[in-house]
Length: 77
Image: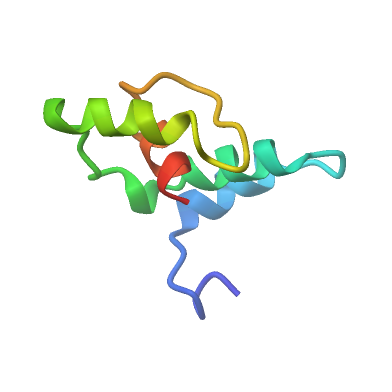
């Protein structure tokens, strides 16, 4: 499955390590945002204002700081 969807091995290791049966939507999105495929996503200073606006309006609450790339990915998802 990882090869078919071009998911890197280290991301699959993270998923296998952190995933458990009682995860809710918030936790699944947070886990997905930790994928190494997103490691080169920068957080620009001029984006932080928009990210603050988005984080208040997303349908699924986002955990984390605006300064973390995983939070930015989670907001965009």
